[in-house]
Image 1 (cartoon, helix red, strand yellow):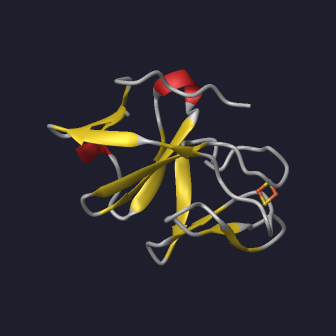
Image 2 (cartoon, rainbow, N blue to C red):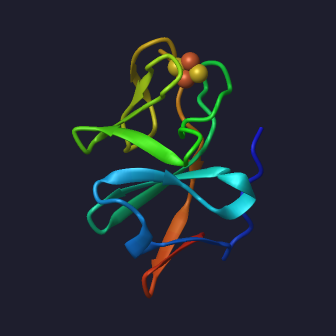
Length: 111
Ligand code: FES
């Protein structure tokens, strides 16, 4: 179980996120995985529901297939980014834990 950031916690600068792409937050050793698709950023607990391992690689990068599907690097489960539902691989029936965000003046913060 990863901690959830308190409301207002700064998680990243928007310009520091790959677009499209995914990166773990600096907060709490990468507890939140941030996914950027243009001006849209979604946040997810950085734990795969399959085996409870990090969704981000050790260097903090997340794997975003074709800019729209998050892929777990451990066993390859894939997740859509509207509700975090698993769409393929060994986490079928599971979903990611969303972390609500707000974007404000180029900053990505917990809602
Ligand atoms: S830990 Fe993510 S697919 Fe197994």
